[in-house]
Image (cartoon, rainbow, N blue to C red; front, side, top):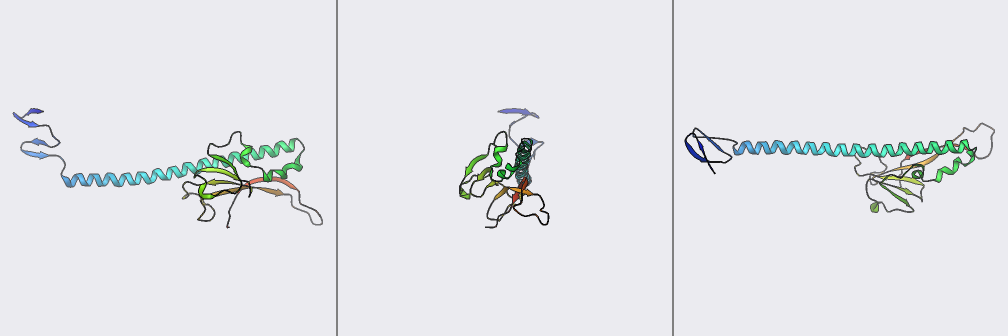
Length: 185
């Protein structure tokens, strides 16, 4: 399409004629702009991955906090019913059962799971070890166990009353806690 400009006809292109001179980007300027845009996009992508890892960490920590609250409620329920002798039985329970609903990324109880078969960003209960395991997607922010295993492991541990000297017999479980453990197998 032709337009009248200054009494002359010219084609509409990316380069505009102005008094006989070309106005616009040179190839060098265009390469510079593309380079700057690509560096900025790499930096933004790195920040995006960092924020995704922070979000994964926050969701995982909130799930653990909810399980600890569920555990406290379960212990309080047993204490109110005067069944404190049953608190020790919580050591082998699946902590997910203390939640109102399991997390959407919970895949269930597994007897002897193969780590490579478990999807990342998921929870499962290892019934052989009585451990709740969270498989990491991004492990930069987490302190996991051995470097080869990208998982965080939690276990219900017993809280015992300090035994007085001269007291015999087995120590009684007074409470339980959900704690993160480190494995070195």
